[in-house]
Amino acid sequence: KKLGYALVGLGSYSTHQLAPALQDAQHCYLAGIVTGTPDKEKIWMDKYGIPKENVYNYDNFDDIAKNPDIDIVYVVLPNSMHAEFCIRAAKAGKHVVCEKPMAINAEECNAIIDACDKAGVKLGMGYRLQSEPYTQEIQKYVREKTFGDVRYISAEAGYHSASNPDQWRLNKKLSGSGALGNMGVYAIQAVIYGTGENPISVTAQEFSTRPEYFKDTDETITAQFEFPSGAIGNIMTSHNISSNKFLANCSDGWYGLDPATGYGPLKGETSKGIIEFPHESQQKLQMDDFAQHVLTGAPHRAPGEMGLRDVMIMEAIVKSIAEGNRKVALNFEPGFGFG
Ligand code: NAD
Image (cartoon, rainbow, N blue to C red; front, side, top):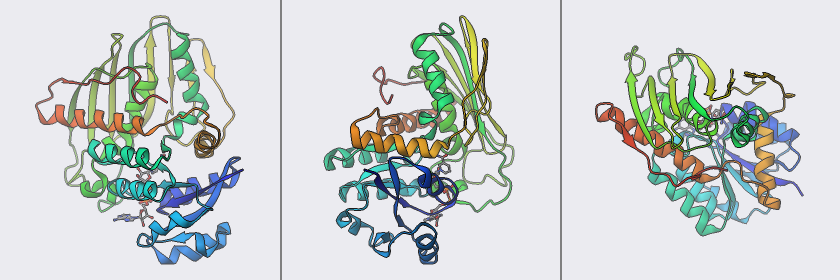
């Protein structure tokens, strides 16, 4: 059986990545859409053969509860709308996938997790890299200590935004944060999967060089993490600097990816040589993995707690900056949020 996904929000990511990926998926397919833009309905119905009864808008979305074709609702809206639509999807009895960052604060993340628990539905994050072979290879090095103990890991995730100061990503009410939530989440993910540990403290700094463009949201943030093993992490995220890589220096060599977070193909290298995997759509792998998790109980690569943990780390970064770059303690249970 293939599970039916409904995409909520037909913007750039749904249009150019998720919908095409679902055409090639093995365990799932594009069964429905939820859009606030009536003009998109016919275009998507024609393009993907979606029947009228599987098309919803934001008002009648809750009727999806009665639709047996839809197994999984995938929320791909601006960040401030994730909580509302994930919770409505859970209440409709549908499994939920939530795009990154999970929500605009930890309270909302917890509300999503509670709603899914209460409804007895599965919850996954749209963390495509957790299903991606280069990232999984790094996770294997960490598990098997192929390069010994990680001593220092750095991760950078950013791009130069120049075209549209009015986009929702630069509007704090809709985005929750600027570079931090949009790209910083990848750098946070990299230092955690690259060490296999949750950090125990963070110290952060913020830089603003184009305040006339970034009026409402953070432009560039750096942060340093301490890990229980003694490993040190350093991240940089920006809406002004293009960078997309990570490097782990270990007691017995090194490994890294550059690019580390694009849609692929990624590139990897270690002190022992090049890492190489055939390219596959990351989104296809991710949506298939979640469908398999629902269908068979296969490993959950990106549970809701992973999204919550990352948002809690972002909140600690913001707190560190607000309180004069002081070190903020993080108290996660070991393994909290890991897939
Ligand atoms: P987008 O701007 O291209 O699309 C946003 C969609 O939301 C549009 O269809 C728009 O009509 C709709 N929308 C509803 N209310 C809106 C409002 N008040 N303001 C603006 N748009 C509104 O954005 P996107 O790039 O598709 O991003 C959507 C989500 O997906 C975000 O949470 C983003 O972080 C995430 N995303 C994830 C990845 C990834 O690699 N995992 C990549 C891109 C985006």
